[in-house]
Image: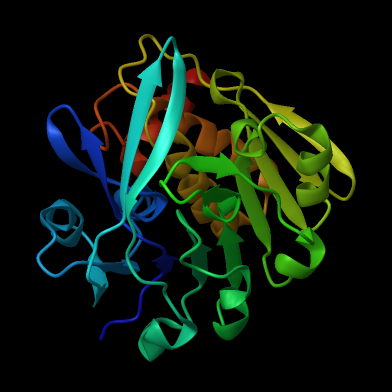
Length: 280
Protein backbone atom coordinates (compact mmCIF):
# COMPACT_ATOMS: atom_id res chain seq x y z
CA UNK A 1 0.00 0.00 0.00
CA UNK A 2 1.40 3.39 -1.02
CA UNK A 3 1.95 5.94 1.77
CA UNK A 4 -0.29 9.01 1.60
CA UNK A 5 0.24 12.71 2.34
CA UNK A 6 -3.28 13.43 3.56
CA UNK A 7 -5.21 10.82 5.55
CA UNK A 8 -8.88 11.45 6.29
CA UNK A 9 -10.89 9.18 8.59
CA UNK A 10 -14.68 9.25 8.78
CA UNK A 11 -17.89 7.92 7.26
CA UNK A 12 -18.88 8.78 3.74
CA UNK A 13 -22.63 9.24 3.64
CA UNK A 14 -25.45 8.74 1.21
CA UNK A 15 -27.68 11.77 1.55
CA UNK A 16 -31.36 11.50 0.67
CA UNK A 17 -32.37 14.06 -1.98
CA UNK A 18 -35.28 14.41 -4.43
CA UNK A 19 -32.96 13.04 -7.15
CA UNK A 20 -31.94 10.01 -5.09
CA UNK A 21 -28.86 9.30 -2.98
CA UNK A 22 -25.85 11.60 -3.38
CA UNK A 23 -22.36 11.32 -1.92
CA UNK A 24 -21.87 13.31 1.27
CA UNK A 25 -19.87 13.52 4.46
CA UNK A 26 -16.84 15.51 5.53
CA UNK A 27 -14.49 12.69 4.55
CA UNK A 28 -15.66 12.80 0.92
CA UNK A 29 -15.52 16.58 0.49
CA UNK A 30 -12.22 16.91 2.34
CA UNK A 31 -10.56 14.09 0.41
CA UNK A 32 -11.58 15.48 -2.97
CA UNK A 33 -10.38 18.94 -1.95
CA UNK A 34 -6.96 17.68 -0.87
CA UNK A 35 -6.72 15.67 -4.09
CA UNK A 36 -7.44 18.71 -6.26
CA UNK A 37 -4.85 20.65 -4.31
CA UNK A 38 -2.27 18.10 -5.41
CA UNK A 39 -2.02 15.82 -2.38
CA UNK A 40 -1.81 12.02 -2.39
CA UNK A 41 -4.93 11.16 -0.42
CA UNK A 42 -6.08 8.13 1.54
CA UNK A 43 -9.54 7.67 3.05
CA UNK A 44 -10.53 5.21 5.77
CA UNK A 45 -14.30 4.87 5.87
CA UNK A 46 -17.04 2.32 6.45
CA UNK A 47 -20.05 1.50 4.31
CA UNK A 48 -22.18 -1.33 2.98
CA UNK A 49 -20.41 -3.43 0.32
CA UNK A 50 -21.07 -2.08 -3.16
CA UNK A 51 -22.33 1.31 -2.00
CA UNK A 52 -22.88 3.18 -5.26
CA UNK A 53 -22.29 6.64 -3.80
CA UNK A 54 -18.70 5.67 -2.98
CA UNK A 55 -17.68 5.18 -6.61
CA UNK A 56 -17.01 8.85 -7.54
CA UNK A 57 -14.65 9.15 -4.57
CA UNK A 58 -12.88 5.83 -5.12
CA UNK A 59 -12.20 6.80 -8.75
CA UNK A 60 -10.07 9.74 -7.60
CA UNK A 61 -8.42 8.83 -4.29
CA UNK A 62 -7.37 5.64 -2.52
CA UNK A 63 -10.13 4.35 -0.26
CA UNK A 64 -10.10 1.69 2.42
CA UNK A 65 -13.77 0.90 3.00
CA UNK A 66 -14.55 -1.32 5.95
CA UNK A 67 -17.63 -3.49 5.35
CA UNK A 68 -20.78 -2.72 7.30
CA UNK A 69 -24.41 -3.77 7.16
CA UNK A 70 -25.37 -0.17 6.40
CA UNK A 71 -24.05 3.03 4.84
CA UNK A 72 -24.53 6.12 7.00
CA UNK A 73 -27.57 7.92 5.61
CA UNK A 74 -28.85 11.41 6.37
CA UNK A 75 -32.02 13.20 5.31
CA UNK A 76 -32.67 16.92 5.66
CA UNK A 77 -36.29 18.00 5.90
CA UNK A 78 -37.11 21.69 5.40
CA UNK A 79 -40.30 23.34 6.66
CA UNK A 80 -40.94 27.09 6.85
CA UNK A 81 -37.26 27.73 6.21
CA UNK A 82 -36.12 25.55 9.12
CA UNK A 83 -34.11 22.36 8.73
CA UNK A 84 -34.63 19.15 10.64
CA UNK A 85 -31.96 16.50 10.13
CA UNK A 86 -32.53 12.79 10.44
CA UNK A 87 -30.17 9.81 10.64
CA UNK A 88 -31.75 7.03 8.59
CA UNK A 89 -28.92 4.47 8.86
CA UNK A 90 -25.50 4.15 10.47
CA UNK A 91 -22.38 2.31 9.41
CA UNK A 92 -20.10 0.73 12.02
CA UNK A 93 -17.53 2.74 14.02
CA UNK A 94 -13.95 3.13 12.79
CA UNK A 95 -11.28 1.92 15.24
CA UNK A 96 -7.57 2.77 15.43
CA UNK A 97 -6.61 -0.71 14.24
CA UNK A 98 -8.68 -0.17 11.07
CA UNK A 99 -6.15 2.38 9.79
CA UNK A 100 -3.57 0.69 7.52
CA UNK A 101 -0.07 0.68 9.00
CA UNK A 102 1.37 2.25 5.87
CA UNK A 103 -0.87 5.29 6.40
CA UNK A 104 -0.30 5.83 10.12
CA UNK A 105 2.66 8.16 9.51
CA UNK A 106 0.87 10.43 7.07
CA UNK A 107 2.16 14.00 7.44
CA UNK A 108 -1.42 15.23 7.77
CA UNK A 109 -4.26 13.38 9.49
CA UNK A 110 -7.83 14.69 9.36
CA UNK A 111 -10.35 13.23 11.81
CA UNK A 112 -13.69 13.77 10.10
CA UNK A 113 -16.56 12.32 12.16
CA UNK A 114 -20.08 12.78 10.88
CA UNK A 115 -22.00 10.61 13.36
CA UNK A 116 -19.80 9.68 16.34
CA UNK A 117 -17.99 7.01 14.30
CA UNK A 118 -14.50 8.26 15.13
CA UNK A 119 -13.40 8.95 18.70
CA UNK A 120 -11.63 12.25 19.45
CA UNK A 121 -8.67 10.27 20.82
CA UNK A 122 -8.05 8.29 17.63
CA UNK A 123 -5.33 10.76 16.59
CA UNK A 124 -3.20 9.64 19.54
CA UNK A 125 -2.79 6.25 17.87
CA UNK A 126 -1.43 7.73 14.63
CA UNK A 127 2.04 9.25 14.29
CA UNK A 128 0.99 12.07 11.97
CA UNK A 129 2.98 15.31 11.99
CA UNK A 130 -0.24 17.33 12.16
CA UNK A 131 -3.63 16.13 13.40
CA UNK A 132 -6.64 18.22 12.41
CA UNK A 133 -10.27 17.61 13.29
CA UNK A 134 -13.68 18.82 12.22
CA UNK A 135 -15.81 18.05 15.29
CA UNK A 136 -19.28 18.26 13.74
CA UNK A 137 -19.93 14.57 14.28
CA UNK A 138 -18.90 14.80 17.94
CA UNK A 139 -21.40 17.61 18.50
CA UNK A 140 -24.30 15.64 17.08
CA UNK A 141 -26.60 13.10 18.72
CA UNK A 142 -30.01 11.69 17.79
CA UNK A 143 -33.09 10.29 19.43
CA UNK A 144 -34.71 6.89 18.96
CA UNK A 145 -36.40 8.05 15.76
CA UNK A 146 -33.16 9.35 14.30
CA UNK A 147 -33.89 13.04 14.75
CA UNK A 148 -30.57 14.88 15.14
CA UNK A 149 -29.91 17.37 17.93
CA UNK A 150 -26.91 19.28 19.22
CA UNK A 151 -24.84 18.14 22.18
CA UNK A 152 -21.71 19.72 23.60
CA UNK A 153 -18.51 17.86 24.49
CA UNK A 154 -18.45 17.01 28.18
CA UNK A 155 -14.79 17.98 28.65
CA UNK A 156 -13.23 19.58 25.54
CA UNK A 157 -9.69 19.75 26.94
CA UNK A 158 -9.73 16.05 27.76
CA UNK A 159 -11.66 14.96 24.69
CA UNK A 160 -9.56 16.95 22.22
CA UNK A 161 -6.13 16.13 23.64
CA UNK A 162 -3.94 15.20 20.70
CA UNK A 163 -5.76 17.46 18.22
CA UNK A 164 -3.48 20.18 16.83
CA UNK A 165 -6.02 22.09 14.74
CA UNK A 166 -9.80 22.22 15.26
CA UNK A 167 -12.05 23.63 12.53
CA UNK A 168 -15.79 24.11 12.92
CA UNK A 169 -18.59 26.52 12.07
CA UNK A 170 -20.55 28.83 14.32
CA UNK A 171 -23.63 26.73 13.41
CA UNK A 172 -21.95 23.60 14.75
CA UNK A 173 -22.27 25.03 18.28
CA UNK A 174 -25.73 26.52 17.64
CA UNK A 175 -24.25 30.02 17.98
CA UNK A 176 -23.45 29.36 21.67
CA UNK A 177 -20.47 31.60 22.49
CA UNK A 178 -19.69 29.77 25.74
CA UNK A 179 -19.41 26.44 23.94
CA UNK A 180 -17.39 28.05 21.15
CA UNK A 181 -14.94 29.46 23.68
CA UNK A 182 -14.57 26.07 25.41
CA UNK A 183 -13.62 24.43 22.11
CA UNK A 184 -11.14 27.05 20.90
CA UNK A 185 -9.41 27.11 24.28
CA UNK A 186 -8.99 23.32 24.28
CA UNK A 187 -6.57 23.16 21.31
CA UNK A 188 -3.40 24.96 20.17
CA UNK A 189 -5.09 26.34 17.04
CA UNK A 190 -8.78 26.68 16.19
CA UNK A 191 -10.65 28.13 13.22
CA UNK A 192 -14.33 29.07 13.23
CA UNK A 193 -15.93 29.44 9.80
CA UNK A 194 -18.50 32.19 9.31
CA UNK A 195 -19.95 31.40 5.85
CA UNK A 196 -19.90 34.51 3.62
CA UNK A 197 -18.17 36.48 6.38
CA UNK A 198 -15.00 34.37 6.14
CA UNK A 199 -13.40 32.85 9.21
CA UNK A 200 -11.84 33.63 12.57
CA UNK A 201 -8.53 32.10 13.67
CA UNK A 202 -7.94 31.57 17.41
CA UNK A 203 -4.37 31.16 18.64
CA UNK A 204 -2.53 32.13 21.84
CA UNK A 205 -5.67 33.74 23.24
CA UNK A 206 -6.12 36.00 20.22
CA UNK A 207 -8.80 35.98 17.54
CA UNK A 208 -8.07 37.25 14.03
CA UNK A 209 -10.75 37.67 11.36
CA UNK A 210 -10.11 36.92 7.67
CA UNK A 211 -12.73 37.99 5.10
CA UNK A 212 -14.16 35.68 2.47
CA UNK A 213 -13.54 36.02 -1.26
CA UNK A 214 -16.62 37.64 -2.85
CA UNK A 215 -18.74 35.09 -4.70
CA UNK A 216 -20.63 36.21 -7.83
CA UNK A 217 -23.41 33.65 -7.32
CA UNK A 218 -23.89 30.87 -4.77
CA UNK A 219 -25.12 27.72 -6.49
CA UNK A 220 -24.69 25.13 -3.74
CA UNK A 221 -23.11 25.77 -0.30
CA UNK A 222 -23.16 22.06 0.62
CA UNK A 223 -19.80 20.93 1.97
CA UNK A 224 -18.18 24.37 1.86
CA UNK A 225 -17.04 24.07 5.47
CA UNK A 226 -15.45 20.70 4.76
CA UNK A 227 -13.69 22.10 1.70
CA UNK A 228 -12.43 25.01 3.81
CA UNK A 229 -11.14 22.63 6.50
CA UNK A 230 -9.17 20.49 4.06
CA UNK A 231 -7.70 23.54 2.33
CA UNK A 232 -6.71 25.13 5.63
CA UNK A 233 -5.03 21.95 6.89
CA UNK A 234 -3.17 21.42 3.62
CA UNK A 235 -1.82 24.97 3.50
CA UNK A 236 -1.06 25.14 7.22
CA UNK A 237 0.89 21.89 7.03
CA UNK A 238 2.87 23.32 4.12
CA UNK A 239 3.64 26.75 5.60
CA UNK A 240 3.07 26.67 9.38
CA UNK A 241 1.34 30.05 8.92
CA UNK A 242 -2.32 30.14 10.07
CA UNK A 243 -2.95 33.53 8.42
CA UNK A 244 -1.78 32.27 5.03
CA UNK A 245 -3.79 29.07 5.52
CA UNK A 246 -6.94 31.06 6.35
CA UNK A 247 -6.64 33.31 3.29
CA UNK A 248 -5.95 30.30 1.06
CA UNK A 249 -8.84 28.25 2.48
CA UNK A 250 -11.30 31.15 2.16
CA UNK A 251 -10.57 31.30 -1.56
CA UNK A 252 -10.82 27.53 -2.07
CA UNK A 253 -14.14 27.31 -0.19
CA UNK A 254 -15.60 30.29 -2.07
CA UNK A 255 -14.96 28.63 -5.43
CA UNK A 256 -16.62 25.43 -4.23
CA UNK A 257 -20.06 27.05 -3.74
CA UNK A 258 -20.21 28.17 -7.38
CA UNK A 259 -21.24 24.70 -8.60
CA UNK A 260 -23.26 21.68 -7.49
CA UNK A 261 -21.86 19.34 -4.83
CA UNK A 262 -18.13 18.73 -5.41
CA UNK A 263 -18.06 19.89 -9.05
CA UNK A 264 -16.63 23.36 -8.36
CA UNK A 265 -13.87 22.46 -5.88
CA UNK A 266 -10.91 24.24 -7.51
CA UNK A 267 -7.44 23.06 -8.38
CA UNK A 268 -4.40 24.69 -6.82
CA UNK A 269 -3.63 26.43 -10.13
CA UNK A 270 -7.08 28.05 -10.15
CA UNK A 271 -6.62 29.28 -6.60
CA UNK A 272 -3.11 30.60 -7.09
CA UNK A 273 -4.04 32.32 -10.36
CA UNK A 274 -6.97 34.11 -8.74
CA UNK A 275 -4.90 35.15 -5.72
CA UNK A 276 -2.11 36.45 -7.89
CA UNK A 277 -4.46 38.43 -10.13
CA UNK A 278 -6.36 39.90 -7.20
CA UNK A 279 -3.53 40.48 -4.73
CA UNK A 280 -5.16 38.21 -2.15
